[in-house]
Amino acid sequence: ALDIDVRSTGIDFFTAGTYKWLLGGYGVAPFYVREELLERIGTDRFGSLNIAEELGQHRFRVYDDARKYGYATMGFGSVFQLRAALDYLLRVGVPNIEAHTVSLAQQLNTGLVGQGHDVWTPKDNRSPIVTFRHHRDIALVRSTLEEAGIRISFKAEGEELRAGIALFNNSDDIDKLLDVTGNWA
Image (cartoon, rainbow, N blue to C red; front, side):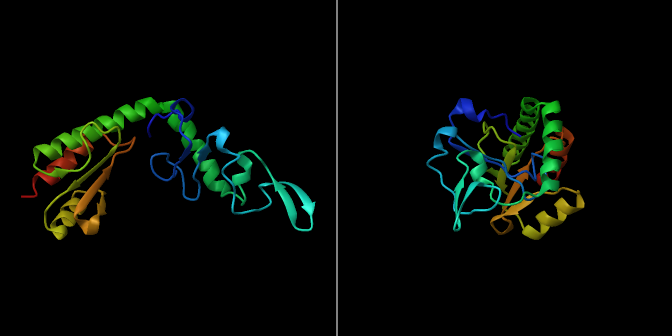
């Protein structure tokens, strides 16, 4: 989770999947549109939830606020799960989570560079994601990570690895990953 104030930054649009760092389920993606742009961004789908008034003869008027984008029934289970997850994240503190995860990403980045890996994520990147190329046999990489119980994303046909560091990771997790990557000689 990154601490972002969409209003103060002047962002026009913002959306986020909830199934990773927001600790939510699938099927929900909060969507922000700067209020001044609501008029300009139309809808291409219509349903009972975004209709403000039925005008007869299959004509209707949609809401002119954010409700106009909510045309279908929500996945209520995922919405309630997200609510509980957001309450938890707010109790922990989004700035605290960002500081924790970005610090761990920097620890990983520094360690990988020190081991000679080709790290694609800039060292000062304010993100809990670190992507690197391993230049090793993919079968070896997969098996050593599996044996160590490390879950990591394989990209570019397995030649790149992407570590997504989350709230529940700690420095020992990073050291464990670096122990494995350090043995790929």
